[in-house]
Length: 117
Ligand code: 5GP
Ligand code: ZN
Image 1 (cartoon, protein in one colour):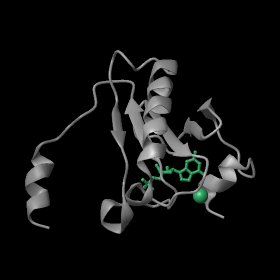
Image 2 (cartoon, helix red, strand yellow):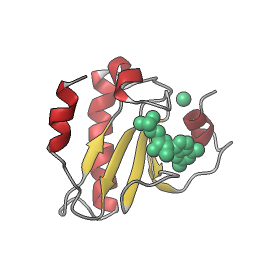
Image 3 (cartoon, helix red, strand yellow):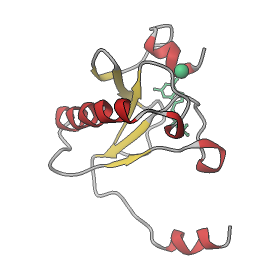
Image 4 (cartoon, protein in one colour):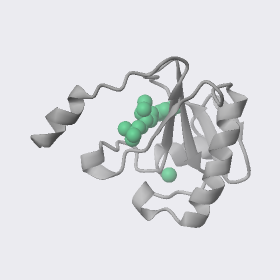
């Protein structure tokens, strides 16, 4: 069983932000921004490439609720999902990183470095 399934099953503790029947939002153990929340479907789906549109539709609404609950719905935030090896995905259970709590850097110089891949 993957680590996020263990969190859903309460075999591994977490700091829950918001929960519904189908989704869970909890603080990332190693935050990369003042606010760093992970949003997951409770049912195991390995990555974005394999998630249904139906689940994503419901996940959109849940994510908007999370943003409102933690107070970044007006100030703004960033949503990221890493998909697969090249995307840098480390936990193979679909999750969205919700980052916020300040003006997040967006370094356009990185775009040039990507061209040389
Ligand atoms: P990925 O690199 O797969 O997109 O992101 C995985 C994220 O999960 C990382 O930001 C990492 O800090 C977080 N993470 C890994 N294990 C745990 C855990 O046991 N608990 C929590 N709350 N976060 C975790
Ligand atoms: Zn899982």
